[in-house]
Image (tube, rainbow, N blue to C red; front, side):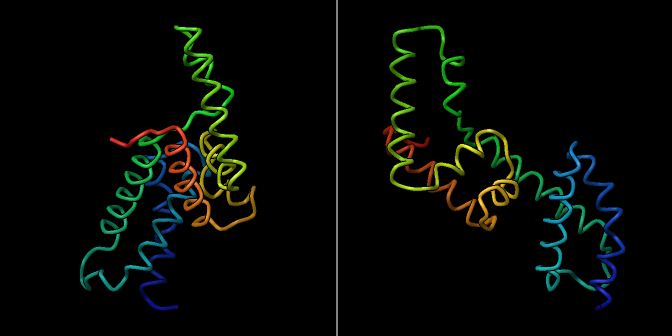
Amino acid sequence: MTDFNHEIADLYPWLFKIARRYCSSVCDIEDLVGDTIYKVLSNKEKFKEGRALKPWCEVIMLNTYITAYNRRSLIRFVGCDNIKEIFSHNQASDDLMVHDIQAAIRRCHNRTCCMDCVVYYAHGYSYKEIGKMVGIPVNTVRSRISYGRELLRNELDLTVK
């Protein structure tokens, strides 16, 4: 093991402690630390010799957390079960809207398998959890969610602003 990799391995408990600032569940903490270590190791050529490693790792962790937070908050898909509760003020138009959304999800689901990933993601599962449930790699999960959202948007004739 190289010196750099050994230093990173020594920082693991410290990174775990820092990740507690940003996440509350142990699974999220482990994911954040894992993503941080992956990014640190894949970008070690960008690290300048003679600089402190801890602050560099902490900045990478913070940026990783912010990116994940922004992705979660950008588009929040609502599963079929909760739609009626959210749109209950105008019953006639709500029933029509719920029917349209459910029909769009069914049509998209008939064309592709990516809607399963979209619905799991809407229920709050992480990419890693969805990958384990469906039995596919995390990057495939991300791709399917992106494609599924786009399909649903097109099916409902929505434009992203």
